[in-house]
Image 1 (cartoon, rainbow, N blue to C red):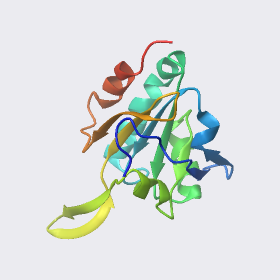
Image 2: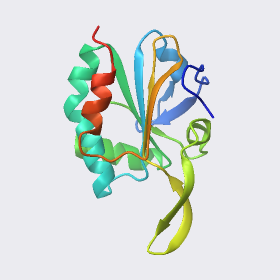
Image 3: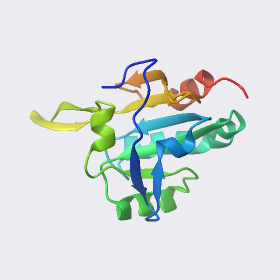
Length: 153
């Protein structure tokens, strides 16, 4: 598991358009990585839209935003198009990103236990080290709180 102040692994993933993205290609800038359970569900849609609405402000602070879930590349492409998301969505079907950031835990829904993605966000500094983390995120106001944690450029 990645801890605060520790170097983040050089992860790579496939985006909705089929291209690939590696965290190492973003070195030298702030990177916000938010993990969410499922494309097109109400909570995940609201979270994605909150980051979308603040994206220009993240960019003004020299930060890139990346959404990550275990959904397919096709699902991500549809979700991003429908919600007009300006930032990349990584398809983590093999759970490499989820495991590196330790975001898959036991959850309970209607009394049934299952392993699922716990909504979490991570701020990676220009030096490639974890600067901040938010686990068990509650959506209202979260994207704004993350934005306020990114130093102004």
